[in-house]
Image (tube, rainbow, N blue to C red; front, side):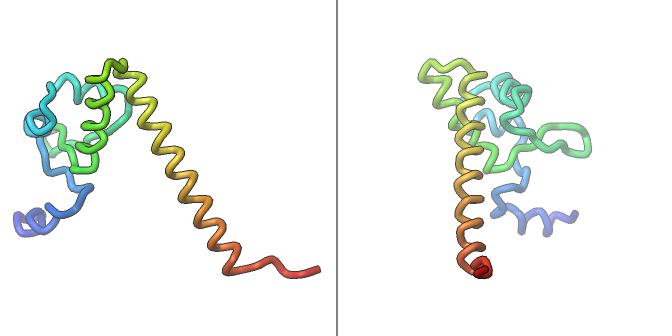
Length: 111
């Protein structure tokens, strides 16, 4: 990937543009916090060719939500579980919407 390719991807929410240090600074947290939510499998940062963690804007939004919960006194493991359960609920809602749309587009044949 060239520098021009990378520059064009900066608008991509999933592009791993942020180093661990930069991500921690942006969130006002520690690198250890980012490691902890990674170990809890809330987010999985991509790795650079040198093995360094890289975070996307999407991952930073999730990490920011986890930090909010932890700052309110929620243990980190519970915060991760809450967020993952919220993500599951949203995915199930979206799947149900798609299912309803598909069924209305292709109604079952009458017997």
